[in-house]
Image (tube, rainbow, N blue to C red; front, side, top):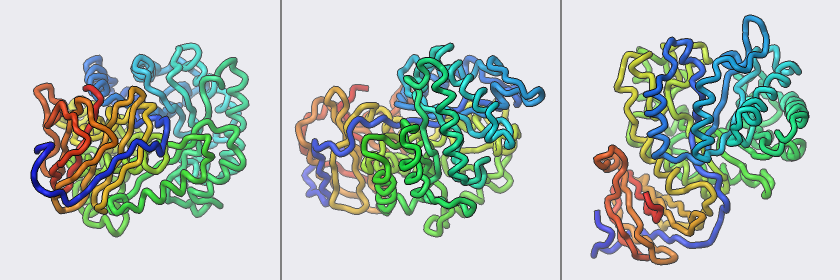
Length: 480
């Protein structure tokens, strides 16, 4: 690859310094505290933790969504008692890393301790006491937002789409938080945490309806709006998904930010039928998942391209961040049943591949870790997203300027044709680096096993860059 060539470009990409999405929170991951590892007889070792920390050191996530299941933590299912010190090591190590590295945490609970406690004041009291223990007593001020129900619009949730119940519980949680001195100064509620493009038949509201009702009836309780997104590949690559996200953003008040608290791809839509067939083929007879809540294609290089594309659409749609679902296969079994033969396989690796699943290769980094890490590192917390565009429907772009004035640009080609791209920038670059990733070849790695720039010390404001089919480039002034 050359940053300059004599071939006439057939695609033009224009990057401006006009800010379209200020003070971006940043990109991150769902990183839950391995609730079931102890039940599997394999709590994470010091070397496991260090491997995770080393990989996250490179990724530099701006925020982490961290959710717990209280029966694995503070709620003793046998006695029904509140036990705040129970199984605390893993969550404290996780939060300790976030605190040390200034990573904002969206913390919460998937469900009440038992289904019949979904409106029980005892749950509210225990849950907020545990939150205060983490934030105030343990000093994890990295926790900035609190989720009280995971996906409350879902027919799989204890709320079963009952907005009025969720609203009532949000008020009760907020009131309990107010009883702890200073807690609401540090932590606000995040919500409604609903799923994009979903409508529970038992609910009066679809995704937009939940957002509208939250804005009209609960905005004073909500510090950060958040929804979850599991689009299809064809939907995002066509450009249609940006319009959907922009519609959701338009509902949220302009003085509030909205994030994708979870995001990944699902292939049930007709346009993705070939991917779904491959997914089913891989899931059949699999030794540690039946594939009912997985993405069996996270091993593939194309997934790295698609996840980077989703980030670009989030940033250009006015959203303020996105957390990938999820960091690690070892975090959850289906239904959190504790069954290692049926895990939620979605991660960038499985840190317990050898210890629990008998396959050490599952601990290896999967390709999408590299592209996700670049989208975290190059578009950090606090950056301003700027306007960029291309004159080709298959070429997607995103650009931003960080707090120190350093520019980053990603260009993603989701088409089957190679292109010569004319990249026009608002000013000359200062010692920029160019990274390249493709579905065919992945990414170039240096001797340290981390992505290596293919060109360094770029100082132009107009570049001619060849792009392969199904590939991406990232150009950044941020010093790695």
